[in-house]
Length: 158
Image (cartoon, rainbow, N blue to C red):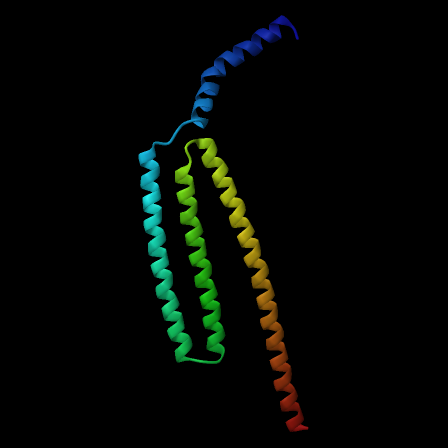
């Protein structure tokens, strides 16, 4: 490199030195303990409320299942699974907030957040696979029932 190029490069480095220094300090910025504790307390309160709501919805679903039978029972099963998934998502969210509140620096928070996103992605894929298998089973059973019913009608008219 020429001296002129080095001079321009050094000028650019010097011009951006405050930004580089600020970014370095931001990465190591510590979150005050009081703020972390406040967030943890709020997340725990929300988690308890979500558990109460889930328990209430479980009671309602159980009452519906007891009151009716047949195909409604399958709908209640689906409803129960959806309620469980919503509850698990809420619980994971509040647990994630609690973990994030434990972070003492921005770097640590970013690492925790990326771990949480990866874990939620794995849960999503698992649920999608289970849902696909379940729907395939329902369609197969429905087709078998329809075929049986058609064969009964056909043999009666023949």
